[in-house]
Structures are given as C-alpha cells and as structure tokens.
Image (cartoon, rainbow, N blue to C red; front, side, top):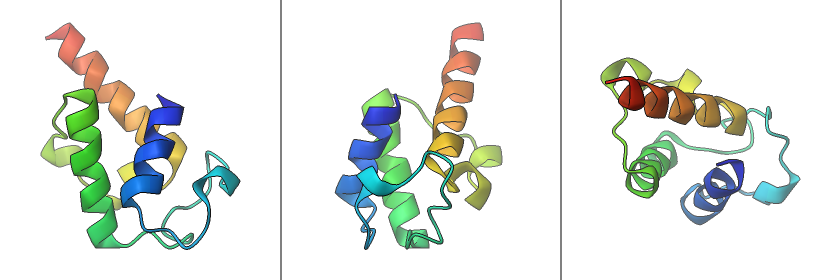
Length: 83
C-alpha cells in the first residue's frame, strides 16, 4: 500500500521534492502539497483502492503524511470489510 500511495503522490501531488526522498512521517504540506493537490490525491486513491473517503476523514490530518494516508486507507478498508 505504501508504494502505491507514493506512486499516486508522485503522479498527482505536484511536490517540488522527489517523493522517494520523503520519510513516511514527513509533513506533506510542509513538503509542498497544496489543498488542490490533496483533493487530486484523494480522488486517485479512491479510484485505485476502490474506496470512498467518508466526510469525517476528509481533513488535513488524513493527508498530513504518507503514514497518515496509509492509516486512513487501512481504516476505510477495515470498515468496509466489517460492513
């Protein structure tokens, strides 16, 4: 999942730094992720993982780092399995 998120981030994130150089916990907004790019990233993740972000997870915290995105996607997938 981490690799997929990194690929999507590199594709739609528009970061001025190489995604490979970022630690999993690095602040993506400090690295240059814009609000617009975070929406593009969310849409790409939804399509790739066939999920939908619930309203309560549509916040800056969910996209703050690669680790945060990974945890958010895992939470959505787990909730879907439980349903």
